[in-house]
Picture 1 (cartoon, rainbow, N blue to C red):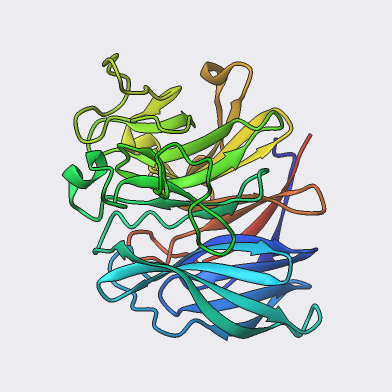
Picture 2: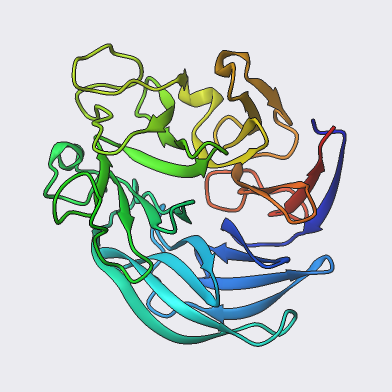
Length: 316
């Protein structure tokens, strides 16, 4: 892996997330606030999310699709929020319909906004929320900063969440940006560290992942250690996807796609090192290809002609 590649789309502007509505891909652009439909090597605008205020790492971030609705995570001034839109029209002519806010008041800042949303195998919506530059919030279970949240599709607290009347599913996170489930239901999350260690974690309900008291493997009682850690220069992990028994992890500063065997995580292998630049997201397409989203136009990369791109990778 990979044994072949093709460009699916190019000339994107700071793209952030890929989500599939049936066999049609939708992509968010962080700074423009646009949602694009990918079709036959080209893109068309589905709509622009109102209220997006791009600043630093904030803007239009994660996307998730459930039935006939598109869920979006966006930065709007002093808050991040999750909204839901009806998806109307046929493939090739999709549009955004009625809008409602599912969850507002999430902490926002120029960095550490989290922003990944995904539906789990239990039908619940999970969201990664960064500490928004306030590290102590990650240990405060009354704050939604520095957390992974679990909510119903309508934004309510599930009755079986680990803390009564709380959306908090896990805490002690700095800036988690990847969510994926293995076939056995195990939830994995990627997380940006500060200066020492970036992390891949197995997420357990109610667990404390240590930030800001620990970073990386610390062996501290009452705090969960990552299953893998990397120096930020080799990682800065964002989106993740699981294909069979392998977890694929997109890396920004590390400019690579990392393949992690779930039965032997220490045997992780790096691909595309420095070949396509920063990699923001990775997703399994209905075709069986792995799609990656480059992020060289986000102000921290070195754009090349045609950047940014969606690149499809064939698997051996």
